[in-house]
Length: 248
Image 1 (cartoon, rainbow, N blue to C red):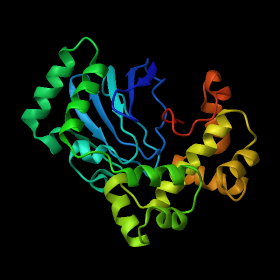
Image 2: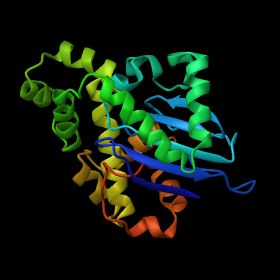
Image 3: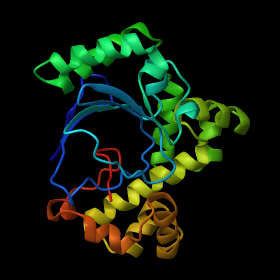
Image 4: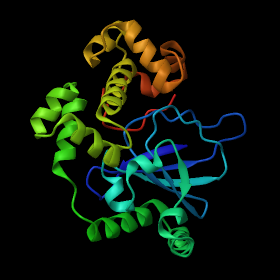
């Protein structure tokens, strides 16, 4: 079972998941521009930004995680996002094994591991530099469907500067981030019940075929297979591409 709730860290989301019986494992996690710090049965790991669908293997019975807003995790974790792209690594590789074990033990002993994870991240964020407002503007404009060139002009950066800062903040360049956010917009509209062609155009794709290609490239599935995999409750939700993580 998977559940989400708002985190106290601005823009972040807390989530929990318990393993399901054999044969009914979790679906693929689709790229969303985010990074997660995850507690899994007493161990801490980091999920870097994805450029393709990630299919988790059940290695723990209980999970708790905090999903950072796009671009926010590197300042808390202390490592550029590009170094974690398409990777899942133990927190010990970033903060040292002894510190990772100490923190994992603290979270494991807590009655609510997700809340303990939230407290840990808030403490670390308080010691780090504040969020870069420029990056928030980049995400907001690309999420609205603005072009990379127009976004760069608005924030006062050249194309190379924006690309370099995007690699450090998001793990990939602004064009890839724009594609990821556009797919999230389109799939939110599909979940709301819009026809594929309508969802494609409203999300900023050229046509339904364009959306189909992006779904295959980024999500590793087809539109029809994605729709068939949705639980009934998800097929009429209000479109919110900045909300819960999309799975297939």
